[in-house]
Amino acid sequence: MPVTEETYERLALEDLEGQWELVCGRPRQKPGMTQEHNFIGRKLARRIGSFLDYSQFDVSANSARLRIANGTTFIPDVAVVQIAQMPGLRGTGRLETYLDPVPFVAEVWSPSTGGYDVDTKFPEYKLRKDSEIWRIHPYDESLIAWRLRSDGMYSEHPYRDGIVPIESLPGVTIDLAELFRFP
Image (cartoon, rainbow, N blue to C red; front, top):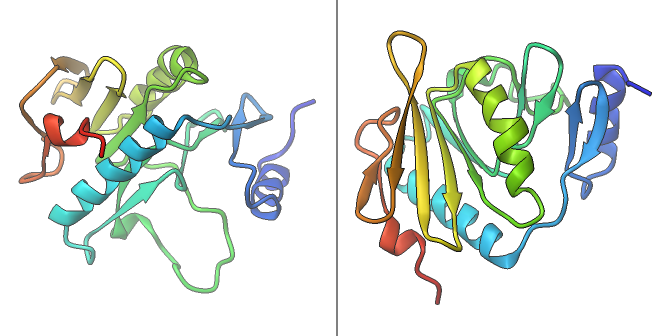
């Protein structure tokens, strides 16, 4: 049975370890991820954060929620949010949820969510008009970047190596060899 956004928010705030998303009015628990998946996501978030001015941007690793106009809400692996999008940081007690497009969002491929991300999340991120969307595949060491063009469409850019710019965040680059290096 579909639930209201208020019920979803209460569930997500009360079940701190649940990682709840809302898909077509139904709560969906984000499944557990592999060690490789989590390592790459955290490393990406730290690298992006090392370039950014924290008075202007915040980097979320598996915590921000992006809401689609139809009420669906996803938790991306990594998202960059402008501080201006974060009204009332103190005292609201509200779930961290963003309706407006964000500059950057990334999903790291995992065996438990790979198909779901491609079929469900990426089309919705594009509908939101998020500026830059990345799919990182830690096993075949590849990246696909979708970048919003001025005509409202996305251009697709595959990468397998090199230093990749996050064009929506000027000056931010990711070295794929370093990102895919495991200790």
